[in-house]
Length: 246
Image 1 (cartoon, rainbow, N blue to C red):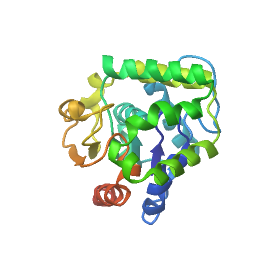
Image 2: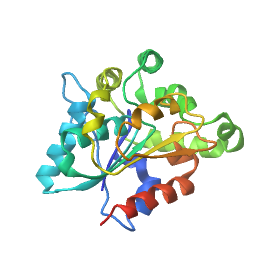
Image 3: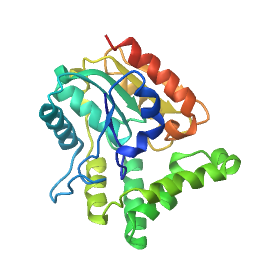
Image 4: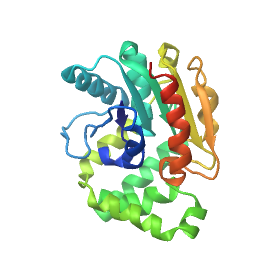
């Protein structure tokens, strides 16, 4: 099973999931181009390029077919991977996904870029700019210590250079996989947080263009149910994965 991180994140972002998934699968969480400890080359980044990277990574390791899971940017990458390399994807788990960047998401990306430049720190921008979109107001009010622990975790990870973040956000802004969805043949699970505004359920109907896709909405969650409802998220996603593990 390969887990693909979201914007500005490295492989450790799925720590709460790998702990459970690894009881059933060999899990590999990757550092995508531009983040973590992997290379951060210059040039134009795209979600299709990220998918090509994962495909090449699989080839080097001799992996024929795997379960693919990703949240947000990871899900965007996963869709391209399943569309371009259908024989390599055993199942597809798309969490907080979107099919084509709309003006709202583009505006968010531009705002986060301004914050990152102003602070000269992608890490601190994550806490001030991205966190409030990822978690519900209730989580901030009820579990401030948990929010702080997540912030400390982000600060403990390899810092993403500002130029690499700009290239990753360009990939987000340019994302458009709508014309490819009909090529996806893998069993697919789609999940959203009910209160997500970034990649909200406004994309659910378009994602249903993936034949046979299953949809789950996590109540009381924003963009990151993987942190907001850990047990429920793990249970419902594992049920899907185990059904398609043969």
